[in-house]
Image (cartoon, rainbow, N blue to C red):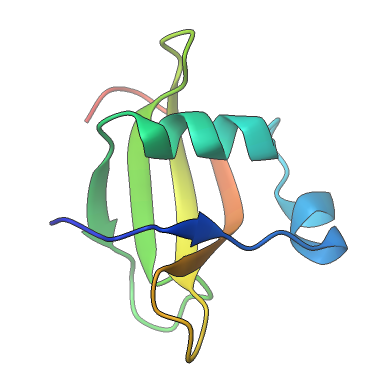
Length: 85
């Protein structure tokens, strides 16, 4: 699955609540690599999961959603360290 992420949406709420050591820099690092994407379970705040390494090689699973009515603009909701897919 390939998603088009043109830009990230950041606000105080999502930056405060990402948790598990996830930061804006890590989200951007993972997205600029060659992450894998998969659809998330129905009924979740995030529509997709982005899985890949940061620059240091640590693997992450990041829950993301596209902003309504703004194609290509995505928000990171939460994430956690993970193992290679």
